[in-house]
Length: 104
Image 1: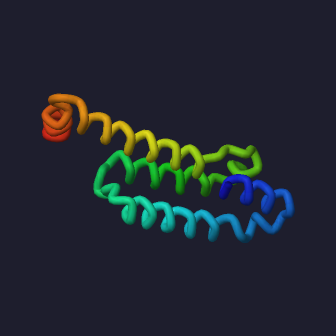
Image 2: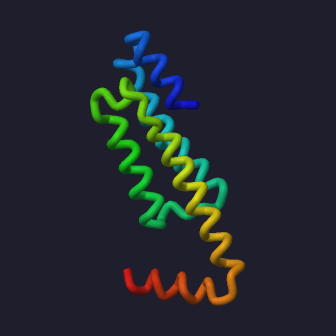
């Protein structure tokens, strides 16, 4: 939804001035939303996804092309959350997760 709004603003030319501020607001709001939902922002996967999306949105012309980076980041975080829940239910999933985290 945010990406669609940014594309419309870009077509109306006012997006050139407003979209950088929209990106900052959305990035901070998404981080707050994930924190309120109990998702750890200390997880490097989430931080890298959030920072990469924010930096990708700062590239000139990305909104004009119509790349839905914020939407893709939301889907990425959704899949991370679901995979964590599935691993908790699988017998031995917590052991495997802890072994993978120790190797980092």
